[in-house]
Structures are given as structure tokens and as C-alpha cells.
Image (cartoon, rainbow, N blue to C red):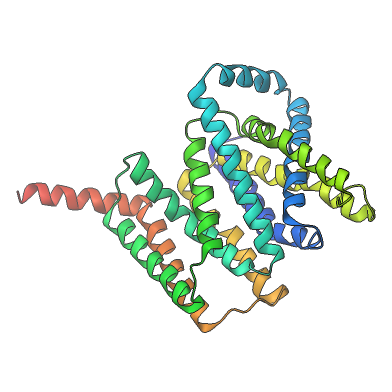
Length: 311
């Protein structure tokens, strides 16, 4: 397979993963009658076994066990893994709760803001430098969030919690350089025992939805593992084949689909104020995306040279 065909395949894999993430709220809506904490516990619990099965199929089990052994002897990486596991669990919980509480529009806002939060975290913690267009994109996004805050009369905590938790998760993941499927298995393994204990507690209390009553509910709860693992595996296949800039643009597919679902399928209110706030945030993302293109890099280099000539 030549490089162009590889990239085309990568775009299809990545786009498909983002489409799956974008329509995932439909799956959580089918479980709207189940508490978000129980959905999360099942999502974590069954995700581990689905990913473990995939690792066995792909002959990566020895890589998983070897990585696990290495992490157990490296306290810094083990701490990063634990933090990443907690952060992704928080992110999943807030997202499930938001979707099933008719807050899909604000949830989509969170994932629009996320790339900008990630860059800001990189600047603060990894000392990465930003260009002028990137600073302007932050200003535009901040205005959008401020408009939402003023119109709501309260802080858009769902959007910012999703953006910040996922941004910090990405930061923690930078410290753990492992295969994506192995990484997901490790992350779910860390919190899986707590999920198992919580599911056991619900069973003891007689308040569990799993294996109690509707078989449809049980199948959906068990299937939450596959619903989590499958998009991640397609994403991994795509990310290996295409440039990071292309991946960055494709990531907006997911929140756009979620926004469309929220407005047109689940009839959440999308007011003129929402449109104004989102316009600022979309403008910020367009500016940010353009700032990462080769043309922007060439213009920046040209300006630097001209500045050097005039000094």
C-alpha cells in the first residue's frame, strides 16, 4: 500500500471513529432510565474485557503484560496511568449524565473547546509556545464561553468540565507512551475493580439494572464495553496513518454530530444566544486550525525573516 492510499485509509478510519463518537449519545439515550453512575460502572467493567479480548485476537497480550510489569516498576508512569484512568472516568460520567439530562448542546460545546484547552495546558505545563493567531483563537473562544455564562446566568460547567478533564487526560497520556489498545486496557484495569465493587453493591442493595428485569437493558449495559472500545480502535488505525493536523480537523465531526442530534432529534433549545456563542467558538476553531497549516507556518517564517532583515 503506497503512502497516498495509506493516508486515504487513515482519513476513513479516523472519520468513522469520530462519526461513531458523534452518534454515541443515541446509545446512552437508550439507557436513560438507568443512573449515570451504573452506566459508567458497566462501561468501565465491560470495556476492559472487550479490549482484553481484542488484545488476544491481535496477539498483543504479551505486550500488555510486559507494559503492565514495566509500569509497576516505574512510579512516575504508574501515577500518570492512575491519574489518566480517573480523569477519563470523570469525563465519561459527566458526558453520560449530560446526554441523559438533555444537555447535549452544552456537551458538544465542551468538545469544541477541548482542543483549545489542550493547547493551553501544553503552554502552561509543557512550555509550548503559541502564535498570535492561536492567542486570538483563545480570546474568541473565551468570549463565546462568557456569552454562554451571561445568558445562562451560571457557569457552563458541563462544557468546561468535559473540556478540562479530557485535556488533562491527554496531558497525562503524554507521559505514558504505549500502544492505544494496550493503553485503554491499562486505564480500564485501574478502575475496573472499583466498578466491579460498585456493581456488586448495587446487586446487594437490589437496585441494579444489570441482569435485573429487562434483557434489553442488560445487553445495552454489557454492550457499553464494545461501544467504548470500537471507536478507539478505529481512531488508533487512523491516527497511525495521517498527519496530526488532519486528525485535528476531523475531530470536529463528533461534537458537530452531537450538536445536530441535540437540536434536531432530541429537540433541545438552541437559541439566538447559543448561535452567537457558538459562532465565536467556531471562529476560534477555524482560526486555530488555519494557524496549524503549512501556509501559516510559511507566512510566520517569512515574517520572521523580514523582521530579521530590518533589525
